[in-house]
Length: 257
Image (cartoon, rainbow, N blue to C red; front, top):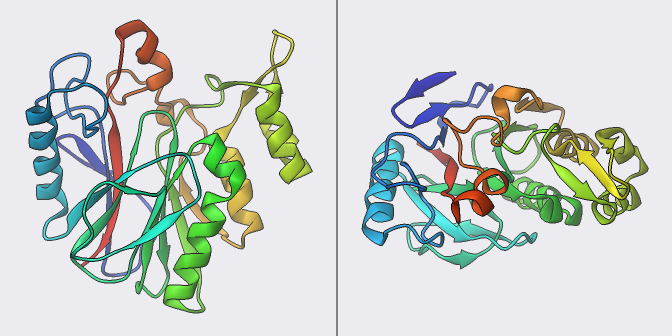
């Protein structure tokens, strides 16, 4: 992957004219525990620091403007254009013209980027377990395919909590298995009754395959992608929120030239 100060470029066969990046926690101006490239304006960081970090991100995506959502772990998506303000309530965004970048903030949840093979449309989705099991990826794909027409869709999975760190309860296991019995393969038994270890990237890959996406890249569930086990590289709510009182957010962005 191509790296730079505070970000890296996904390795995937994106069509011509499609650009993407994922930030890390490094390269910004926020003080601890938001050090240093925090993009979240809802985590008690200093507003001036967040504004400076967002301006730095805008420099990385220029001339496209990153559009930040108010993510609520749902399945709603919005189309972005030059007039779309920050703060719309949605967990996915669709881009069909240059000038704006679909931007998903995370700190353990899975960011998923999509590109239609034609390059006519791109999208990004926020996939925590609630959104994933409720169908946020399928809803985003439906919007992308409606906008771009027939053709292959490729996907990239960004950093997220890994399968050795994502402890969930029986209700999460039951929800996924009820939606698709094959999901059982992506849960491991836990030593504590009523608990499981869940493989969030694998669950997302399964949902994407079922939705007809054969070309999926990025997060394979390995340690290098795990937000919890990479404290010098990624923010992690589960790792840091209780210990430090809060944590920052990094972002995955996709846009068209």
